[in-house]
Amino acid sequence: MEPQRHVANILDLSNELLCDILERIEADPDKLVSLDRRAYLSVESFSQPPRQLPNSQQTIGNFRLACRRFSELGAMYQLPRVTTRFSQKGLSRLDRIAGQPHLARHVKKFCYMVPYFYVEGRERVREVIPTLPTHILGPHSLHHFISKVSEQKRILATGFDSAVLGRAIRAFTSLQHVQILRVQDEEDGALLQYIRQQPHLTQFVELNWTPACSHCTKTVGTALMASGSPCTQFSSPMLSPQSAFLLAEAPSEGFAPLAERLTCLTVHFDDPYDLDVKMRELSGLFKTVFEAARNMQAVHVGFPSHRPLTLRLEQIFHNVRWEKLLAFGIQAWKLDAQEIIELASRHRDRLKGLRLRDVLLKEGSKWKDVLGWLRDNMPRLDWVSLRRIGYAKHFDEQWAVAGVEVPDDPPGGASDSDSDDDDIDLLDVTDDNDTDTPTPNDEETSSSDDFDRHSNSEASEDSNLGPPAYDIDFPPMSPDTPSTVPWCNCNLNGDGRRVYPDTAEDLGDNGTFVTNQQRKQWENWVVRRCPEHSSK
Image (cartoon, rainbow, N blue to C red; front, side):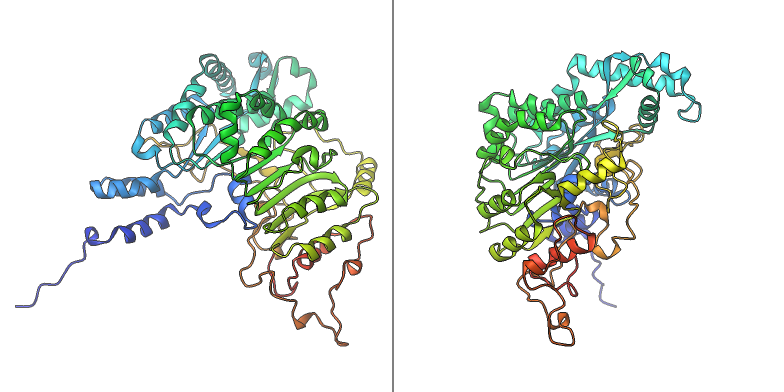
């Protein structure tokens, strides 16, 4: 008689091996990027919720049905990230998740997708719809818009969103990251565009982001403070200054502990009117938050590329020094060279990444002075991002000659056809009428059809930069070319002299404008990385 062969049984597998399998199914990209890496801000804060593998949530759900042991192991992988839209359907599903403690306690990231609000008193959609060309909106648009207006008013009047958010964030006992994104479906986009082309229609209907952002930021902030949430990261790529004003009104006993827990803050402000004035009025709030946030490790504060801020840097950052800061970024700012140097100097002992996107130097300042100081005084700096840096005078002259008119609060964020990536376009996420299908356990998921990336018009030009340009200029740094590796002999010409500059004076900075080729070379030069053997 032949000996009986042992048949492998999945129940014989160790918990460690099963968890490894579940991690591959869930494939959470947020786990792969640390705070000090160049890709962090794009992956964690500025990109849309990642597309999951087909049926990954359903696969893990089915795995959990096998037995009690599998149910407990699979729970932490089934719902690490919750994405919810401000709608009756989305909020109801969020409420059901909050009612399942065995799942809710494993949620680590909450993404709140907020649509434009129909402004009160201007929601007479019924009078507008008949005037719209048939090719813009489908045959059922009248019912669709009337329903959306009624739903928004009902949610706001009853406080349904506030109550659900309070229950959910209280139930998310492992929450680490809260993200607020602007969402726009095709019908809203078509209506918004048509109204902008027909100004007389604004007396009938208006879609506005500011009240939507303000309301949702306030409700989320209130829920975080009331629940004592362990959340340490907040991000929003299209934040209204008005929403920050509302947070400033919060009781200090709830606001201060929330600020103290912050390790990462990544925000991009936009407003069609008087952005400088509004940010100046927020200066005190920034001082309160930044002085309380003693555990900060990554900070990014940005503004629209076409409307850079003109305030001094310290009117926002108030000479604060963060002992644990690893990465710092600003976007779209007119500054003096010394302002950048002084802020970097306060963090020279720990800072590994510095992002100066769309930063324009004022007259009397030169980039060679900034870059030379960074190279000589920032020994731990691993990467520098200088995309679209330049000079304020040249920038102003270009816009004056071009006579470009940028519409206020455009539906997809402020677009920039001359940019070499499309990060601003990604500030809106397209949502197809909330058509996502609930999983067997009623959790909200993000299917591959729920989100559409905008195309990158300059992808071919940036093909040598590493990851796609929608990564908001934070592609991962190559592990093979750390900043400690000296420039190699390939940079020597036939006479034995280096092809690349030895000193800041050799950078070719003309004090007028910076070419894309120059800024790429300068990024490598600052961190002493070989331009031939490093990947951006």
